[in-house]
Amino acid sequence: MLALLLAACINTLASTHASADWESALPGHTDGLPVIIELAVPVSADTRQGEWETLHNYIGRVQRELAAEMGWRNFNELVTYDHLPLMAAEIEPQALPQLRASSRVRAVYPNRINQTSLRQSTAMVNLPAALARAADGRTQVVAVLDTGVQLDHPFLRNKVVAGACFSQYGSCPNGERRDFGPGAGRALHPHGTHVAGIAAGVMEGLSGIALSADIISAQVFSVTEQGMGATDADILGALDWVYGLREQHRIAAVNLSLGAGNVAGACDARSPYTLSLIHISEPTRLRRI
Image 1 (cartoon, one colour):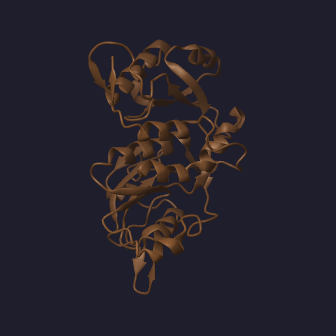
Image 2 (cartoon, helix red, strand yellow; image 1 turned 90 degrees about the vertical axis):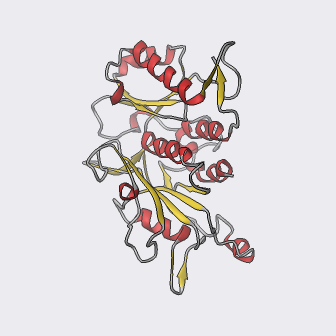
């Protein structure tokens, strides 16, 4: 269910990624070439005969091996993921051919900046049909990956059950690139509060779509001299974190009211987002090593 609902939310992200050009990945950014690296990790097939290894450990091992191969000495400076076969890094442009040629790499994508987007809401989820079934989201949780949620907003009071921040340029409440806890997902901008209110807000005489559902808030935006935006690496980090909460919360949906431009291709074109969807919907969590 989580994978199916997530699929409906990433159309714009995946489509724009398929047509993204490298020069527009991070406008004004000159410290290096920001990339998302798809690791050569199988989705469902065994890798080779031997003992069983968890997918988490296997991904971690390939990440470390690639870092050593590329000569990236400070592994902590790289963006890594627990459940997704990806990495993010800033590399020298001349290192791109070597990276693409590695047997541990399946593809390299630009790590783009995404903006807030909210063109449709209730119509997209067929609200009249949901109301007719008296579906109110009771016991379920909606994860909102956005600009964070205002925790004391009267429409969302006591709604946030988990929070985190993923901000490549250090816009988390603790001033770092990562932060965790209910307060870590607090609002950097009102957009996320608006989205969360549509999803599950409630107060006397007014409610969102799933008025009895709770909220997981992941703040994925950064503020820089060029403005406010969410990198692909941070959005993927939040998706990876939300997936890790699947045993603690009944996550009914993940909302990403984000995008990087007009849709210019099929939403199932290969991208880090479609890859992520494949992996989180794959039931086999062990790989043979």
